Length: 459
Image (cartoon, rainbow, N blue to C red):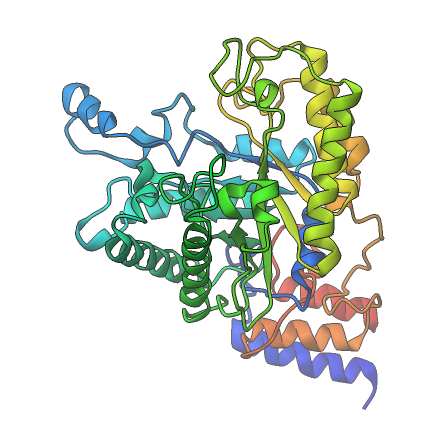
C-alpha cells in the first residue's frame, strides 16, 4: 500500500471515532497524562531554573479563622488563606509572567491542612484551587512541584506522636496522589518541606546522641511517601518524586545516615535549600543569637564557601547519579545592598546550574518577582539569569524541534502519524515523547486537525 493510502486509513479511523466535525476539545498541554521515557536526571536538567510561589498556598495560622469570623461570613474559603500572608489572588497572568521571564519550573508550597475536615479530609475547594494554578503553570510550558509544606507545624510533632502523625501524613498523601494521578511528568511531588529532622531528638551542635534515631525517622517518612505514591493509581507508579533532605541542609543531607528511599521506578531527586551565609541570606537588618546581619555579600571567602557547598552536593549526589533540586535559595531585600543581592542570587544560581543542580528561587509577595507587574522586580537580575540558562530556548534546550516528531526520534514520518492516531484513540500504553511537536495548528490543542496537517505534509 502507498504511504498516502496508509495515512488515509489512519485518518479515517481517527475521524470515525472522534466525530466527523472535528470539534476541538479543551487544550491538552503537558497535563494530558504523558509520561516520557526519560530519567529523572534528564527531567531535572530540562527544568532549567525555577521560582517559588511562596507565602501563598502554604499560608496558615489559627488567626486566619478568627479574622474571618470577625470580618467575614464565618465560612473559610481558599482565598482567605491564599491572601493571608500578603499575596494578591494568583492569576494566570502572574504565572505566565514567570514563564516569560525564563523560569522553567514553579514550586508551589501547600498547607493542605487549611480547611481540613475530619479524618484529615482535604478540602475539595482547596484542592480545586491548587489544581487551577498547577494547570496554569503547565499550560505556560513549565514544570510544577507541589508538596506538603510547613502546614502549621504538625510535622514537628512526629517524634512525640509518631503513630498519629504518620497516619495523617499517609492519609494526606494518599488524597493528593489520587487527585493528581492523571497528570503527566510535568508535575512532580515533593515529600515535605524542610521540617524532616528534629533538634528535640538530636542537637546538631551537641553530641551525637539521638542522631541515628532522628535520621532513621526522616528516612522512614520519605519511604512512606514513596510507597504511598507508587501504590496509587494513574501515572503515579512512574511519577518523578522529590525527596526532602535532612532539614534540607547540604551537609546534613550529605551525611551517610541520610538514605534515599527504595523506589521500584528509580525516579527520584533529592531536595535541599540554600540560605548561606545566614547573616545575609536569612536575617534582614537585625542580629540574632546565631548570626549577625550582613548587608553585603561577595568576598573571596563568600565565593569560596559557595563553591565548596555546591561541590559537596555534586560529589554527594550528582556524581552518584542522583539528581538535585535546590527547592529554595534566596535572600531578603530589606537591609541589603542591591548589588550584593543581585550578585548573591546570580552566583548561587550559576554555581548550582553549572553543576547540574536545579536552583529554584524563593520569592514572596513584594520580593524578587513583582506579582503586579508580572515580571522580576530587578530586570538586571533577569539578564543574569538568562545568561545562565538560555531562556531563548525553552528549558535550556537549544536543539531545534522537528515539527510533527511526536515520537521524539528526531525525524517526522509515518510512525509519528500512527503514534498520534493511537494517542487520539486513547489506546492504553500510548505515550507521546513531545506533544508540542505535533501541535501543527499552534493552538495548544492536539486533535484531529493536527493529524490532518501531518497527513498533508507526508502525502
